[in-house]
Length: 89
Image (cartoon, rainbow, N blue to C red; front, side, top):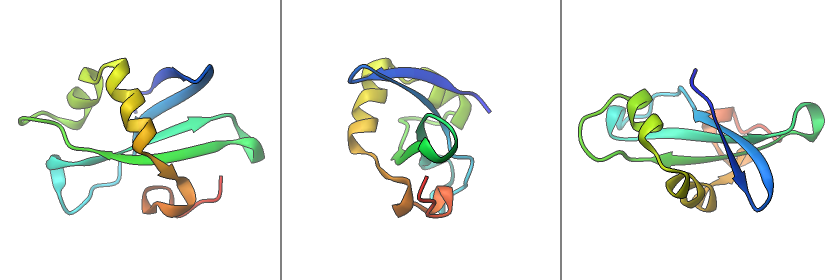
């Protein structure tokens, strides 16, 4: 699975597609932002709707740093998201 690294407010986050297929199919996919490991790991989840017919991998690869920052700002804690099984970490 492709991963990218972004710096948000001075913190390093990895971001990658959730891999979970929604009822919207290729129209929308989840993105997971993850920082740290183990019990200190933090995760946030959001959804992205690419414009035009593109694969998830290509749409993710085409996102700019600015777009990723905007998506992070719209994200929600992992415990609220089915993409990570409502995980607390």
